[in-house]
Length: 381
Image (cartoon, rainbow, N blue to C red; front, side, top):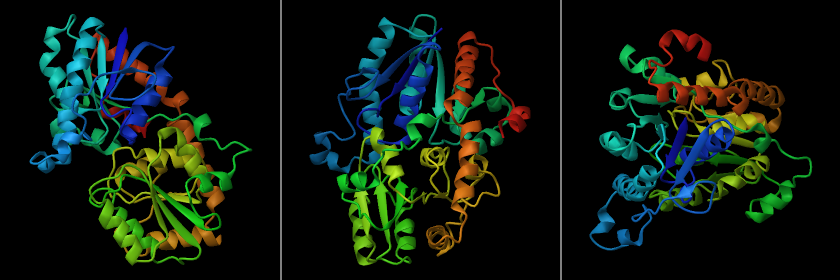
């Protein structure tokens, strides 16, 4: 069995999509014959020529300035496909696994032209609604909520497997210097540092809500770091932080540096009200870092229904209060982080999930669907 992983953004976009596929590739090597196809940059996989990147200078020229972010991503995916499909035809695989829905739709239409009609697994990390996923032969669901809500037909073609993480990557070494890391990124040395690993976005990631909550904390004692991909809301978010007198830093860094940034923080948060599997939450759990997120269904599944990490982010002041209690010692941070870490090792370490991915690939390659059914959710939960 040979497996191909394809991720158009890898190498030039720093999101959970790319990090998840990169770590999946590393965990599969030695277990199956696997090839990685990435969109740009140096890395472990083959780089496919992306002729029209979402960051192409073409979009700086009128009227292309009016092309929205989604269409830029679509154009990037389709231009990536030109080189990818050529390479794939020269060395076809039994299974193609991709989180890029544009690439998945295109491959679904063309698969009959490839030797052996390779099977396709769409990895629903966004996550898209189940009505969208029904078009695919096999679906990898990271979202407990979406898998649970699937009708019987889709559930039989779905595999519920969460993100995997390497505990060693997230384990802080004894000789790590917080001061050096903060100095490298020009972060305040003496303040309680709140980290939000998130795109600079107001609509879904709700970074504006995080900034407003941070404004309720003492300016001299707290600082906020928004680490992620810039977006169209960048200027408005920076202006908001300035107007509210929040010590807020916006940075973008490579995935390799994410653990170090976590280790030099004091707490983490994420402002979104819904997510599939928020990678930053798993990273916080593995790094034994206190984390506060909204109690949507997937967060409750990841952290546990009664976790102190769950904070209502629709009510003003709740996040600020939780962070203040953590900083002042009125919240038992040690018990929280150890509980999260234990759950992380049992459910989300690669030792816990890698073989589940291998089994999914084998099952799809053999055509022996259905996959896991809803009756197995009790074991997944």
